[in-house]
Length: 370
Image (cartoon, rainbow, N blue to C red; front, side, top):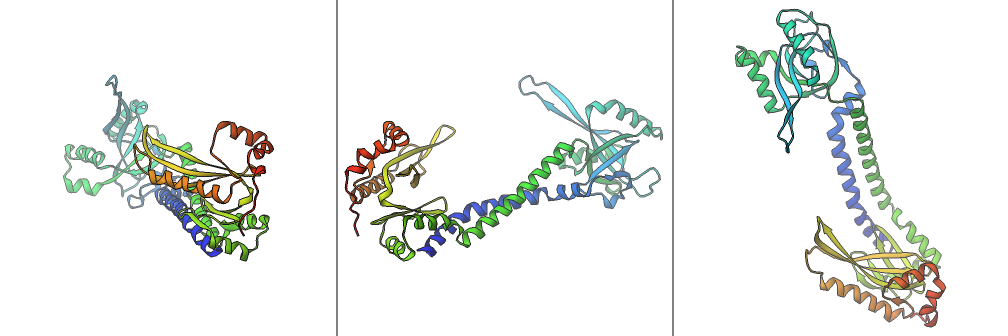
């Protein structure tokens, strides 16, 4: 019995555990380059040689020269059709003023910096340096369309294709990226990814070691059943629903909720009813879930999912009949159990359980089959 329940619990536990592992791993892979650069800290851009410049690097830039704007970025109001420039892309070069090994690349700045960037570009055209403007940002690779504008700027300036490839890098510094709040968000997501992975591993290990059976063992112990006696009950019980291993025996009822096996003494079941849940997505019916709800004498409720049919308009007759079959069998071997739901019964059960028990539970003999 325990090995079989352990396997069933493990099988149910695997899917959510694997989902968590996949999500965690995907997040880590996606965030890994940014996390590495965050851990390294910012680098002074002027100290980097062209071959050292890579995507995702965080840099501080002391910019005193640029060579003109090659692209504008704008946003459009779909209602008024008004367009507003938000960012400008300028050409800069790598290295400090004494560098002999340099390349050209881009930098993205907010449109509010247009005046000082244009003044700097005019000074650079006259071979003069401006007062440095300090930026911090992330080095990113130019998208294909972005790169095409960058390339056209050089070709229109008289450079050949070969010269362009030899003196440029396909990167730009995004000064809006990786600000303090973005760094915090990246770190939080990275921590969440690690938590997902750790939880996924813990879930699998816990299920493999039988940890999901702890509650089941405690319930058996509280019921006063030994392993051998419970195993006989389990093997002889009538299987009502294979998916949740829902079995009703002569003295015990077995079922799995989520991935945790449970056992309930039949004599402690006082109320049972069918629960029907309709599922909708965007207002469209996508299915119906049928459940049998078992209420114990200690006011503990157990809901065992019976079936789920993915149909948009009609309810599966087989699923409904299956739920009714369970209730009929409960009535057959546990005649003291009150069947059916209404709001008055629910209020009485929760507020005055003794009066609830007097309706049927205390009036029917509990001579369970042995």
